Every structure is written in structure tokens, then in C-alpha cells.
Amino acid sequence: MELIFATYNAHKLNEIRNALEPRYTVQGLGDLNEKEIPETGSTLEENSFIKAEYIFKKYQKACFADDTGLEVSVLDNEPGVFSARYAGTGNSIDNVDLLLANLIDKKDRKAQFKTIMTYFDENGKHFVFEGIVHGKITSEKQGIEGFGYDPIFQPNGFKETFAQMPLSQKNEISHRGIALKKLLAYLKLT
Image (cartoon, rainbow, N blue to C red):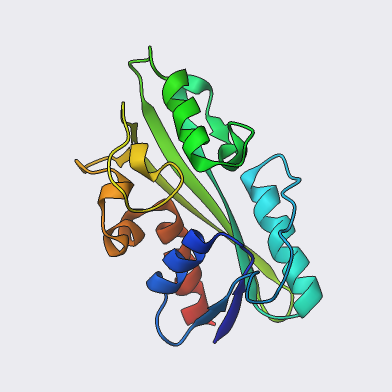
């Protein structure tokens, strides 16, 4: 089955391709020579829908999009929907450094990663799947795998950050992995 994943993020695309069964082939926006779709929504749900709807309307094919936010309790769930542009530079290292600076004097470091995945089937019906993983923000970067906030996010029940885990392990427990499993379970029913 062919799917379009409305992302330019090579790391996200790699995670999805690694998590999917061989019967699925996934094209990203780069494969389609498509421009980045602006995230103009004020919530993860809105941004996920905007991207998936745009691709469906243009290609009339089964597609999905996600939007993910890191929500830190003591910072009123910031950076949230602005996770990818938290520092204003578009650079994930700057985002991580700013978050660590904002938490320097905080004891409560509880956080969660939340992914909203919107799927449009070939008939234009859409479905929404959510994935959440709870954890905490470490005081320093640990690990070299993953991307974004992975070096400072330690999921509950683990001693490693996402950046210290092999991709296969991260896909099993991550927010995106959980949302993707829900999408795949739906696809198996149809």
C-alpha cells in the first residue's frame, strides 16, 4: 500500500519507514518535490489536519501527517505546538539549549511528548490518532541518536534518553510510534 507522509523531516520519515511493515511504501514531501506546508494552526491537531488535508486535496491519495509537541509541566506545557521553533531559529540545538536554560532552577522536570497523526483515506475520510509518552527532561544532553529533544527526554521507566536508544526501541515506546501503531491497527481493519 502506498502512503504519503506530509513531512520534509528526514528523521521523522526514517522513523516511520523503519516502523512500517514491508507492504507499506511511504513517500515524503521531498520525494514529491513538494514545498513545506506551513503550520498555521494553534494546536497540534490543527497543524496535523492542515498538512494531511493539503496533500489529500492535491494528490487524492491516502496520506497522513503528524504534529508533535514536547510539553513541560512546570513551563505551562511549553514549548508545545511551538516545539520545532521554540528558540526562533529553526535549529533543534538552539531549542534544546533554550529549554535547558529555562529549566535550570526547576526541580519539577516532568514532561510528555504528544503526537497527533491525521490520516486521510483514498475517499477523503479522515481519522485522528494520538500518541503520548510521559517522562522527564534531563539536566544535560545524553546520547547521539534521534533528533530534536531526544537527547534530553527520558521516558518513564527507562534510564536512557531517546537519543541513547536504538531506533527500534524508540519506535516501540515513543509518542510517534504509539500514534503510528493506532493508524496501522486501523488500516488492518479496512
